[in-house]
Length: 152
Image (cartoon, rainbow, N blue to C red):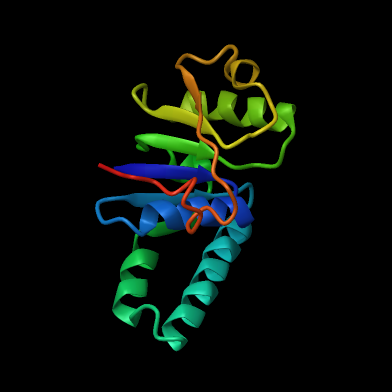
């Protein structure tokens, strides 16, 4: 399964890690600039480096996780996603614009999800050709049991 994560900041990084820590998932970590997406992956890698140094994870395990995360632009990476989770900052216009653009890029069966906790999912999804779901993650997304993914 390929998951697109829109926004490579703190929440996007955590969501990307939550998916990438599970075998069988490929993650496209996207932002509005290539260097921002790459910076997000670099921060993820630094966090894992600390876990390796503490003996919490092996370097092989980290390499496998990082190998499942590809940084880039949504235009390049989201065409074949099965799920796209948006984690941009809380601005309704940014979210609506982002999903309108994704609606033209993503395959028809791709599911759209927003990580918002305060904005209307109905309003964000208004005018799209597909349903929109809310998928809220708590921070840090990859470690909070309330937002941890149980993937099947």
